[in-house]
Length: 398
Length: 169
Image (cartoon, rainbow over all chains, first blue to last red):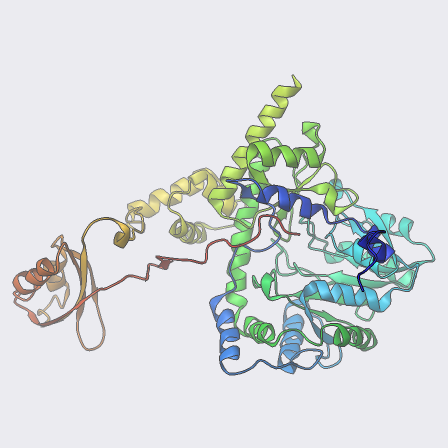
């Protein structure tokens, strides 16, 4: 029997899925891919290849026949190493067998956490601009995303008064992502304490996406889960992608209260069973012998961070000081263009790809996400090209 | 200094960065290291004067240049001189322009000498006529280099490159 297609295949689709717009990043990816000689500042991943010893650990695993499933929550050695690492670096105490789950990238961990928590109609508080998946995932699971705008004048930190205004009786979860993709903003312990008080007062759960925790400059990252009273209220999400240059391995993890982790594990076991064993073996090696390499990469990002921020300011773009991740988020408002118009012309005329800020939600319009995880010579060239476009734009205005 | 780098630290960081790309300008280096351009210039001047930085030369993959070149590593056993040890004999060897590098080694032999010539014959004749005839040289073992994969931390034919997508979240 053939499917009745007169009404179109789309009519078979779930209406929530249908209602979700495709990612704005996708559009730019297509545009950039169609152009030639592009310098890309649009890449959301390290420019390093995974360290050799980490790659070798996976190869060795394959060669010695380690090709089976693992326990749903991940190899015990890996969960132990994660707990040891989080304790050493961020003063966190997780029981590896009950409070840690290994996931397919931080992305799956976010999905699991939202699925495990959201009841239809629950409001999910999301400081924006932010990573592009939080709001669509919230909708997919029947929740209502409530964006909270953050501002360049606050270095894109979440302010307690803004959070309190957004809280209603339906609020259930707050998603935090500091250091931030796309802004590079961070939050210090002191700045997070009033947030923690509100979380307590309004009985919220926090999903803290700390995938960029290793990439802070000038100060060490404080995990939200390490604040007084916050461990049980926080699902910590992290992974290996950014710190160890392992994006393609899709290795992440979540830590939290045993009841929450058990619920997430239930979903995880029915959807993906377990993270691939090769990636788990590589991740063990990264945690045991990858710290020196990780520190070197961080230093290199920091050097390039100074270069682009100084460069943007020199060509006349306001740019808040990004203390984390590997993004600068300069304002292009002085050009009079929207971020989409600017990014489009930059791509077409300047041959530089960067992601327009509006795709990251509230507060993103007027900004451009520029990843500085690329070579110094390309960064210098990109800054020059952006500077030329700005001169051209100001000539047009006259 | 703004970043709190003291001169010695600054110098070390400069060397590390220049080792990745010796053509970076003082301005770029200063920005990257959170230092003043003047300080960077001074640090570079000092290191040049002290011969910490000997010169700024490219790492060349001569195998890709359309020119014949033969390189050999030679293990040399020598009889050290009274009073001067190995230094005088080493100098007698390293002064020849054909000699690219000379290291004093621990272990089974004394000097490791790298020699470059246009042909195998040229290298062979240098070893037999110039090197072996130095009075203190007891023996030589010559190994020809067939291919260079990596030199001074640089992989010659690195196929890994940047394989990332142009735009990603």
